[in-house]
Length: 191
Image (cartoon, rainbow, N blue to C red; front, side):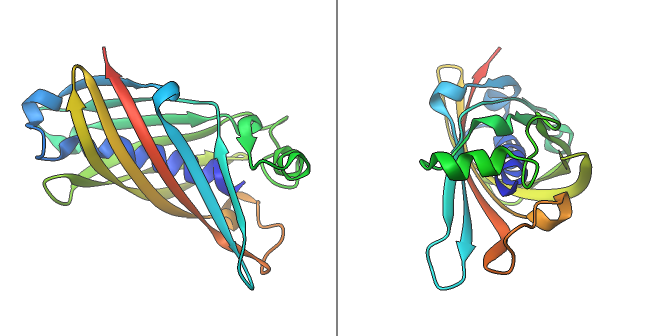
């Protein structure tokens, strides 16, 4: 469940990064589709006494639109498919997909839709938006850092923290943290 929320947050943050100055905004302006083959969504949840849970999402899609004249009008839309969660442990993956966490059978998508993009430096932006998981929607924020623009491809590093309890995924607390840390690398193709 953390993974779902963090995945959307991470995507939103990555989409906000196109406002960075490392690449001229005029050069980065345009619409991009996230390329899952060259992107990754990772998450982690801490545990009392150390350890915790680390995982990824294998299936996701998204788009980024960078507005040349007003970065604040840029947009990020992202969808994560929670049935694709992977931790390397089949039993845990099945539990995460179950109705105790993601409820992937009844809630097959986690969605993030940006509401604003605020430039915070030459290469970073804060992406704010609405994250929907398990039928619950809350505002979330992600930090996006522009990693480069080359041959019609743009790259972002997106990070954020999401409280899983807001989305009805608080099983295991307080032994497992309520905070899900997202760390995403998103590559978008112009077009």
